[in-house]
Length: 337
Image (cartoon, rainbow, N blue to C red; front, side, top):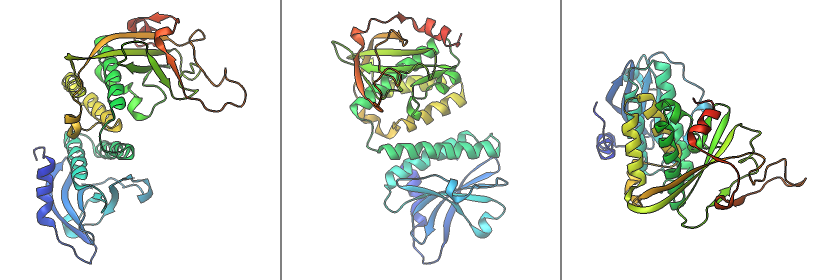
């Protein structure tokens, strides 16, 4: 089956409408991936839209191990004769969930499964659940698109990701190191060390918000660097969507890297359906790499007064006098090269 749009998916569900007091499924086959089968469906009672996936031999996890989010749930399904010989999971819209957003989710999950059609059953199942969990994170964050601050932060991280690739890191290794969207303590984890990214468009100064005492604690990961990304608004620059498209083109030669990249985007709150919101074009002014060590101004659990448990503070990176090094040198110390 060719990739479908959200509107086409809704058109597939439409003829299945109709409620019944009896529990069950009305479904239609839409694709087959390896030995797995996919069906568009509606549930009874309730009449909610669903995507069914049947696995030929996989032992399905207990219900409490399956993801549920705002607007959807995943549950085991029994289809009767039409589903005989397969173990079925249903991705179902919750009654309060937005149909448009659920349609986007189903189309995205469906494309992930179809892109993995050559994978073994267990790996396909893990990618299926992994993509749903990415959407679970997205819906937990809210689905109105990124705020201006979040948009800027993502552009900054994408600039650093591009620089890692330009420096010669393998595609998959580069995106696999990107932990910012996955709620990692630091934005990039490389070897035993890390790079934290802070971004600004301020013309003067560079105020960087530090979210916790642990964020600049180099005892947790070493060596540790802070990348200061300074951008300016420019018609000659690239907006967020253009940054993403350029990276996707680069990842097109490595399907695993592309899947990991798209997964990070959803975890980070970015959806292609929101791309018209992101019109600001940014150009890179400078990228400065600071070594975070005993000479760097910071608060950590080891240099704050007894009794201070949490702190959030700001540093002006423009005033920091600590050692600055090149990205290539930082990557050498991190063991990348």
